[in-house]
Length: 261
Image (tube, rainbow, N blue to C red; front, side, top):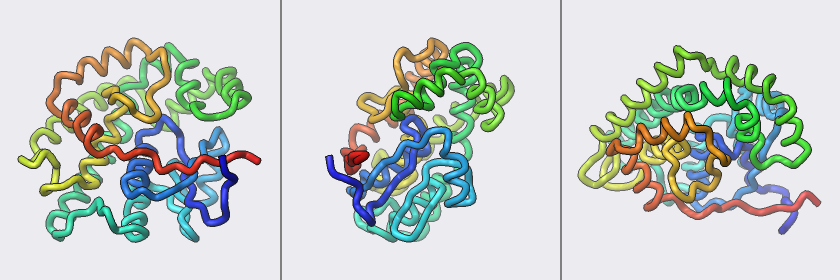
């Protein structure tokens, strides 16, 4: 393993985050070598100080520090245009970006609420393990010890209640229907090639659908409530679409492995 070098492109991420998967996929699709750094509980102030937002992913790209997955992809399009995630025709690009925004808003938080309500209440140790994936042993023990407190903070921060979980399931079902409606004869959502619209929809659904060989799958044993929810979605045509998009277009990781030395 090599030491981190000055000038490396660095992605701050949570391994299990679907928004982080969106950013990772864009980096990997463009074959951009980058360092990935998993942040623990310190992520909130660190991200806020660098971007004005207390969220991940955060991409450090040259002198830019970008704290939103959509803005990260936009910056990567300028950094390395080929292969592009934006269609050439302006009308297609506008539709593509509108779908990206739709998926961010209608899947990002809703799928989290739909999937995690019961584990947050019944299996806080699993939630803590999910959040601590990729961290060192000491930080994982801290997360595990503080699991009930962490779950309360997580529920409050993301507004996860019985009502938002129910509305989340309704929204996820609507998004799956929308994907089926929008899919073109080519198999893509816009035009004849893979775009950020396809990437966003698939990235935000991959964990809950259990896409095989996902780089950072949900930790085992997965709570029964999540498995039941996954099974309830499995027969939808758009679930197969997500699996196919991953199989066809999820590039190998472009992560640079670094040592802590």
